[in-house]
Amino acid sequence: MKRLFLSLTVVCLAVLAGWFLRGVWHPESGIRNPSQASTSGAPLFYQSPMHPWIKSDKPGKCTICGMDLAPVFGADKGLDSGAGQGLVTLGTNSVQAIHVATSEAARRPLTHTLRFAGTIDDDDTRHRILSAYVDARIERLHVNYQGAEVTEGQPLATIYSPMLLNAAREFLTFRRSMLSPADAATGHGMDAATARLRALGLSALQVAQLPNTFSETNLLFEILAPMTGTVVARNVYEGQSVKEGEKMFELADFTTMWLKLEAYERDLGWLRQGQVVEVTSAALPGRTLSGRVAFIDPNFDEKTRSTKVRVEIPNPLIETGGVRRREISHRLLADARVTSVAPEVLAIPRSSVLNAGGAPIVYVEKGPAAYEQRRVTLGRSGDDLVEVLAGVSAGERVVTRGNLLIDAQAQLNSGAGTPEKTKPSVPSASLNAEQTSALQGVFAAADNLARALAADDLTAFQAHSAALHTVVPAAADVLKTIPSLAAHIDAANRAAHWSPPSDIATARARFHAFVTPVVELAKLTRSTGGTSAPRIFQCPMTKKSFPTAPANAFWLQLGEGTIRNPYFGAEMLDCGTEVKP
Image 1 (spheres, helix red, strand yellow):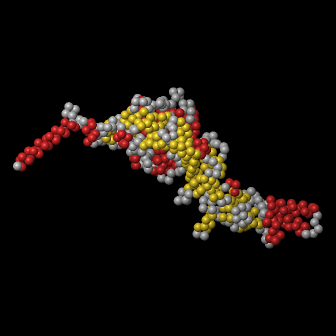
Image 2: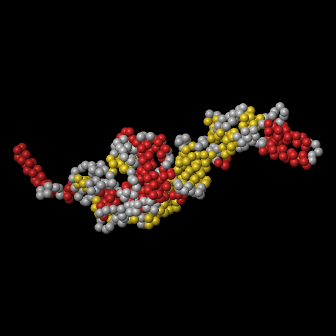
Image 3: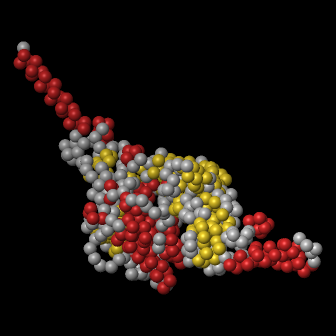
């Protein structure tokens, strides 16, 4: 009985196996039936989400970017092109694999945040230098340290001055004569004696009180504070003799502080007087101060194409340990943030715009997994949105994530370049001397920053950063007539303005944002021999070199020599490969 049962079991298994092989397996080809494979969940092949031409019949890694290969099933043909020019269609599984996301073009407010770095100074209109009116000797100092808070009329020092002493005696003589029947001559002499005392530094109150305070046993005079404020400089000591005109004290009114900023031409459309400004400083951790834009200088610097902006910040007195002082100290470094909101405009996310070659394009969703390329005309850029003047209508959906991969497929479909645009290139004519010099200045600045980071030298990096404020805007100005270069130098210019980084990781992050478009400039110019272009290097291991770092990062070096990796410094100084033309 057991043998019969075993025989029946073997026969059933054989029938089931035959049915399976007939329906799913093709003996003549040796591969699974695509439709049956899809139903059973088996992929046809595996494809790189970022580089779709990389395919494999088994799971693995992309040989270019290192990403996991995504499975492609029977109903999904992978990345494919549509019939129309500029139209790209994707299989449903590919849409999921590359995480395509879209957003609706709609009218909405445009918010833009400007960030500046500047120095907090005192109110220039309330700054006084107190010099000696006459030759004198300092007998006593009432305020003998910098930072002291004084009020108007408070004694600063007591002096002895023969010239002031003679003028006081002359005044008192005329005054005594006025007690007798006065004549016109005496009156005029009294006025002259009074004017002389005022010219020698006595206040009107001191002159009025002179008959009560002066005597032949008290020949000293007091120097009074001309204003309420803070002593920022004291240049005299007790017993010191001073000459007429010699600087003794310097006073400043710290009630309201001036934050001095530099704004570039592109910033002025977002700035206006009276705007609220948020101010932070490393000296005031955890504090955010509030000020207002009080003045925008109408005069621009011809070299940097920047102008001065003044922000006024209230500075109250505080008491710490029984000592009164101002909350904001003099000449602090500070960061400022100005948020401006424009009226509603037709806007799309900035992430949806591709700018290869300086011709902005977007991909518009035309149906399930179908995307059409559109050239757009852009207006102002906000923090997350950009104004659209032409090319997209309200209600249409644009691709915000996955558009780089869609664009890559469109380039493959067209054979070369993105449809509806040509490859970026420098004009065939050589760059003129001014343009060549400007580019070389940018390359030299990037090389200096890279050398400092390769040496793990934060101080040198901060020192070389100052040159960017002059070199990069100047290059942007002379290259603006060359569209293929203008977009990259403008991106470098936007990234070149930062507050001093506090650590080497932050410095590397800011360097990466700046040097990436500079590398593109180097690639474009070296392809034509327009300038003495630098060498370009790539590091494929930068993921952990600084926060938000990409897996691969580029930099450039001038001259011959070994690799100096700025993203790791001494940790992996020679990591990287040179990118050949």
